[in-house]
Length: 173
Image 1 (tube, rainbow, N blue to C red):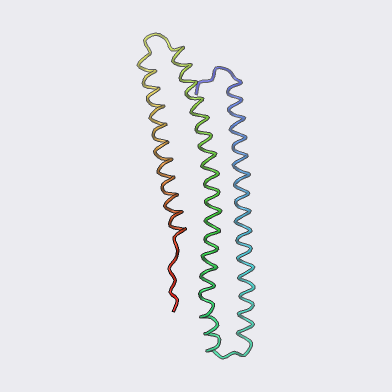
Image 2: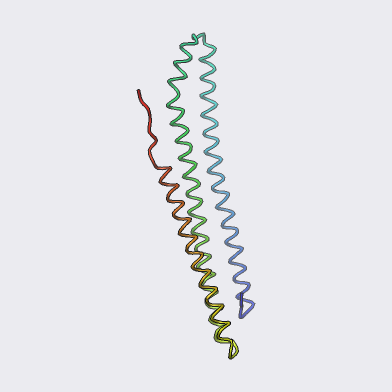
């Protein structure tokens, strides 16, 4: 990339470092949320396992134990769905934050590239109009390709969210 002054280069590098640290902090926050969710699930599972063992050694008949286990199938399924929903929410939040960050950085880089391209066009030697046009076309094509990929990613995310939000049919008898 073309920089007219070392200050522009230093400024861009400082901004990139700030973005990298911001991204790292956000990543840790999402890992903390995931760890809290997993700890909650582990605690609940441990408590339920203890209760099941207490019931198993309480002298109940095999039929009573079977009825108890069958009665717990639906609550367990609901807990799994709840866990998956929370997990999806964390992943969705992380994806949205990262996408916003990358889009902001792309917009800033695109503006800087446009400025550099304009500077290059103004300062290009006579007879280099074809090279300048090719360069501008390449930058424009890269922007169009990025926008197409961003739209495809947004559509894939929307489909995944719609699939997650769809109600799960239950079989109540």
